Image (cartoon, rainbow, N blue to C red; front, side, top):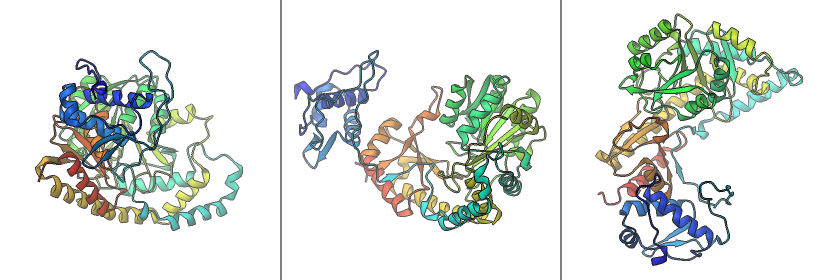
Length: 473
């Protein structure tokens, strides 16, 4: 086995387990390690390579998860025999032309704790089909023409009505813009506001995808650390930002709710500096112990808040419809800037959604799903308590469709996620949500519960505990 012992560089930027994983992956793909070969035992490789047991286990578990290895009971790890890897190109060295390697088939984890997956069984499919059919019959004339550039007026009227009643948003149809998703909306705002907004503040940690949209449009992104009740307004003042992106109803990913005092401070910052607040009403409908918190925009008296939300979590991510409520001064600019652009959302889907709202199906569905997700969250909390006890701490449990687990283990979030995948469970590290170096002492992982049944939640958590803490109990 001597020829299978890699030389690892402790000074390299890549982690030791990453170097170990890459070594064996390239040896397998090149054919130097042939199908059926048994890899060195964990104990042997620890001694030979001078690394910890967790480093070797994490590398092997990643190779196992990606389909390169198979585990044989009481025997060890072997290169899979179902695929002949010999001759496949490996990843190029830095500076070389990149070669596309063929994907290796891997079994999808049975338990996927994704934070944006909904309860499919509760989707009102019959009602939605009726709305689609009625929309095609009643509005078949729409098929011959482009629609309103801002979205169908009747849909915008229904959205404005709902927001006034349920989210205290100050909105009339003329302020509403219908789009295809949050990132599309943020991108359109970046183009619109490019002359005025050079620096944008975001929550730290926060939503990485939104941060990347700002960066792709050339804006300087300033991370503002979170306090116990939301981002630091004092540090926001010191940042020099012209706009701030916030999730006050349910901070992503940590779940805190911004109290009224801090909301007023944030609005005062906008008033005194002329800044803009981009409010993502993330998971605003789903609070389980008390009523949903009203919107920040509903408190705004100076037209400083741009409000965005969507139907993805509450209805379906497949219905690609989101909406913005723009202050009148911003709406005038939006109309002029995008006057040549057609609305990107299907007119028929807009009409179906309009009917879904008009006929009261939306409010009924929200009430139903609040109960469904509350039961699932309770099942997750109970399973975590029973399986992990003091081995983890739970964050972000006041609202929404996910929890954060702070795991008291001497591993990174990525290592824990790789071990989980090998056990058939998909969980999500929060590392990507940070910009700066100041990260929590223990790894934190996001576990969504919307797409799993209570039974699947319990089974998945049991597997996690056995994978992460096999020696406990």
